[in-house]
Length: 353
Image 1 (tube, helix red, strand yellow):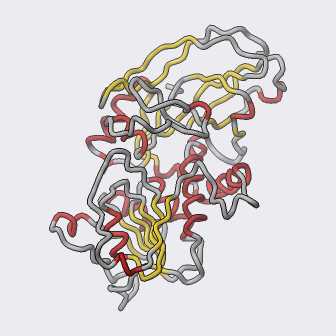
Image 2 (cartoon, rainbow, N blue to C red):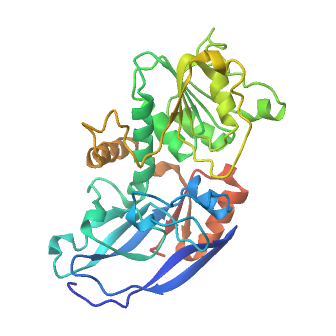
Image 3 (cartoon, rainbow, N blue to C red):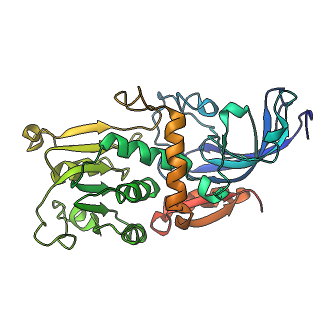
């Protein structure tokens, strides 16, 4: 339908206070001439960033997102948040080409049943990808960015701390490199199992050492005789700031640690006064909003998105969806992630039921 006036009702997920979620009905404004109306099919919950918001552990002074237009503003309650919506274009403004109608698109939008956007803020989903798979685009783009920042070298020994979705996607990409060894770590058995199914050399549980206040000891099963070998490149993707100590302890002289976790207001004592001082280890801050300046002369966001789409086709990450909730049960989805994260990998909100 072309040029229909507004009045469409939508349901939007709002965080209203720590551990409080509401589904609010809102009326969308009239569709502009250069805009389209998208009906959401599914959206993926970020178990990292969104849980910090759900728990009220976000820094109030930080801008929500300086790049994504739908997320600009500050972190304060009530807040609609999310950035992984897949939907179908149901209406177009008078100046929008009719070929957009009924196309499946991705958008960085908060969790809502409908939204209005201009076509330049939408990404057409390749025909070979399902909506479920397309929900993973933001995390795949993050994984691509992490690997580019780490710049793994032929024959390196690589460690990934954290096997949530970003960790699994990062490990999936690293598995395509000719590394000497690729090891992962996560405190949840379900995620270690998913990691091992990728074909990594080993995946270990860091918790026993942490609870006993001991140093993490990497098991030797991945490479006989290499139990004490440290890693050339380590990715810290666990979301736990204390894991930085583990990353430093397990990284070799002059190695690199790529820090992709966002810790929000979480704090931990980091030991930079011991062996780190002479280790020449490089700590690399990595966040997907900005491309590494060293690459920006040749790389831009469209090129990186093309790489991410192709990676989604190869990896097919929808196999990691462990739970689906209809939009009206969003509160249950966040409670599950908060109280029983060990049962989850990816949780998706479904708008078709």
